[in-house]
Amino acid sequence: MIEALPPRFTPAGIDVMEVVLQHESSQTQSADSKPRSVSLKLKAVAFGGLARLLARSALGSQLDVEGFLVNGSGKQSKQILLQIERCQVMPAAS
Image 1 (spheres, rainbow, N blue to C red):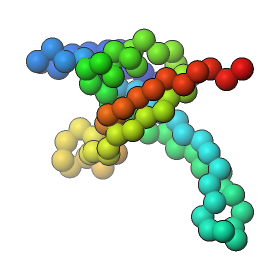
Image 2: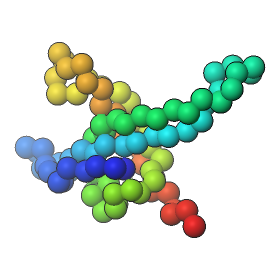
Image 3: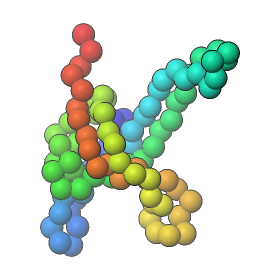
């Protein structure tokens, strides 16, 4: 997690946390190709208990997340947003 907006609430009082996640890895496209470096920044949103978990997590925390992709800010948006459905803060590397 490399960025986080201040926590907020929906009109119904549900916690919301918006963050930016960064992914970096090495991927192989086929058995005979060289590994390729992959880097991605993605905006994400979490609700309820997951929002509270992210609000307590420090910037730079390594997270293991699962969720689904949605259009950000309305149906006409061309921005992709990850809606987090499961999140685990990973232990710091030593």
